[in-house]
Image 1 (cartoon, rainbow, N blue to C red):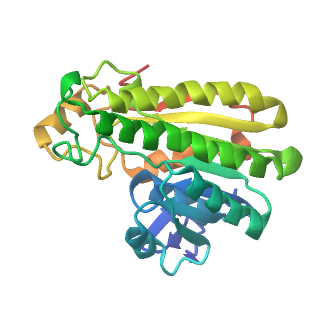
Image 2: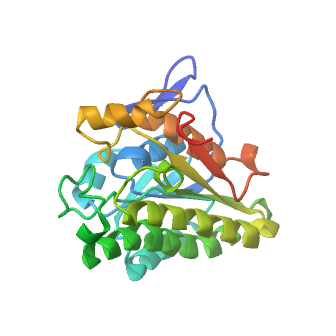
Length: 276
């Protein structure tokens, strides 16, 4: 990792991250799920650029190793977030190596079961076409997996003491907007919002904050490859453009900083005004 002469940014692996010299995560430890690609990758890049030690979790071991090879601040762990034993083992490793946790970002998620048509946009939204296995898979990864990670993170964040810590869960504009998606996805993401508020109400007195971010169209593998469909989605936004992952990560990481220490239980809509 090298910093440019003006202090405006830092090279993290293959990505130059613009930080304007900010180092808000010196001596901080973070866990990010879904960290091999997409929003999770961008979040790890920004955390590392600002000084954090990061544990990058993802199901895709080969992609994890490819993305984070040569970045010493990142420890890659292959984890299925829907498997409680695997999640517990990953956080046990964080405890053994650092004894505490300062931030968690739960970016792991899927839009639909991979066998239902195009994995980028899912299958038919008609309820009768959604089989039991597809429903269970989406709920298990998006909602149950998020809970497993939060459940394991909270005791570790308590170890940080009075300074507390932050958790950011990733929901979706699909949980809030009347868009005809296959039902498991918006159901799982709406569940994340309810869970986030409940845990925020419980943990605020311990200075442990938890907020949700609800993205709209973001430049990831989950973005529809059908240009007409994508254009129709973006047209619903007053700011009609697709968001780069680095822009989404900037909001997520801000919610993990001490600058956001009075923000908890909120759903931050990063969606160009699609939901207000």
